[in-house]
Image (cartoon, rainbow, N blue to C red; front, side):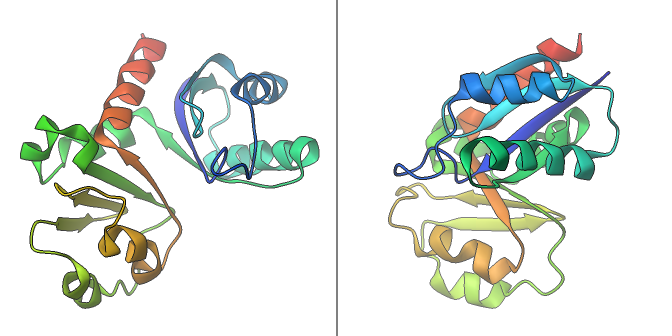
Length: 181
């Protein structure tokens, strides 16, 4: 069994894409997943599966959600080692003191032509970002809600991204480690 971390994009936000976590657990169980845990309503799950093809598993989950709820969410599946690596490579360790200001954007793939100059031009003085492979780190001490950098990063990177704050990233690691023991 392999441990996976599923990051769902755009579910249970603003009344759209509603997917109760209890129903997500049933969907995952129906696909043969075990030891399923969910974290907050915005779409985070940790589970074990014998499947090694993450793309196929993500597609199967999305298809089942669409059958039941009428929408097909984008799902990024991470292996435990990928999550550990993302945490270890955090270029802004000082942001961990106020974890809601530190965000990790998990990208569907490594961007081929990210517009880093445009990203740099729209950031405010207190914001910092760094792209490392398929991870986009953003430290926004003044908050993420009004950040033009946060609002435009996916478009300027050119690949689908799902974002989690540092608290969530750490909690998912804790859950996944517990599942992996």
